[in-house]
Length: 258
Image 1 (tube, rainbow, N blue to C red):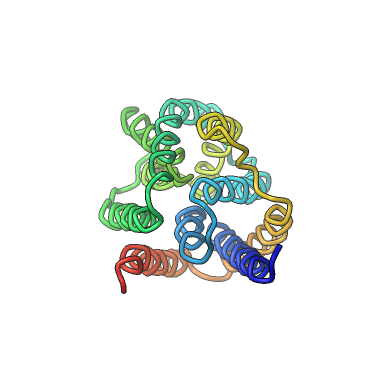
Image 2 (cartoon, rainbow, N blue to C red):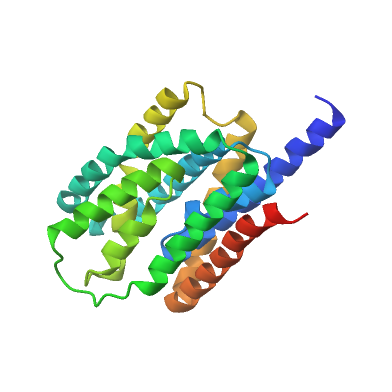
């Protein structure tokens, strides 16, 4: 490995560590947005290919979700979450095929597309105001699960449709935070298997990337849980949405600059 290649690798690892730690912090504090941040930031800060970024996001966010779900396992209603996971699984292959199509496009097109997608998700979250209730029509759950599976396969960002569905329920804070994690974590084995099959290559991160992944997620999760207990959720959510807006706009306009 040349000196310049070593420098690029070191920069990638530092960017990966900082990004994953930050994403784990945000998701632990506000309950969503790991992959929304990680995909956009890693596209901007590293030269890692999109499919590999998505795989890193899957593994890192799964570790974070397992840690959170284990702590709040008493609040998981599996008879409710497992059917949602099953419905999401139906749309997952279509999302992964979309990911393969996107990965064959230019880096500039990918950055702009990810930025636009993140921005549309933010607009939906800001505009859809529903008074929480105990029960929703079953069709809304099916629609949210299918959309989640499609977006989860595309970029491991299956959370937003489920966030809208979950927050439309009058549930406790604990159940609200853990339900999303329980639904999406069940899909991970199928997600990894389908990505390997469709891309026809090994997408498992390198040993150095895996070494960076573990401490960054653990540290970010611990800090995020502490912050979530001390700061108000509306304030943390507002900060997260503001940062996502900045990152989305950067993804859209940075490739267009001379």
